[in-house]
Length: 155
Image (cartoon, one colour):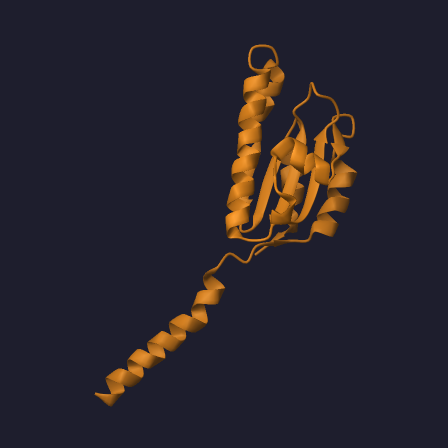
């Protein structure tokens, strides 16, 4: 009987030790990524964004954001964007993901009927969540830029 109780305690202890390692431990070196993206992005189509860009384009509460990299369209007639947003937690990451997805859908609607090329870029956009990070890449060079982002993802 004591050996069964001991075994149960051992199993519980093992599970409690393993649980923290089961969470998504994704991390991105934002400084290295910012440098790599600056070298590769097409400045003809993109401008560097700031906090006000997060608010204007995605309606994100900045209190939910740990760090971010943002490139916004150089003109209102383009849809090119790059956003890598590190949220402060899981709930905030999901909220930010939904806000970015809403932006994408609004852009599709806005360009529908006359911005055929821009709509195609939006349909091919990369939007994903990795842990507390939301990644959004739109543009002719989206796949190349995403490859740069992928090289900086750890975990």
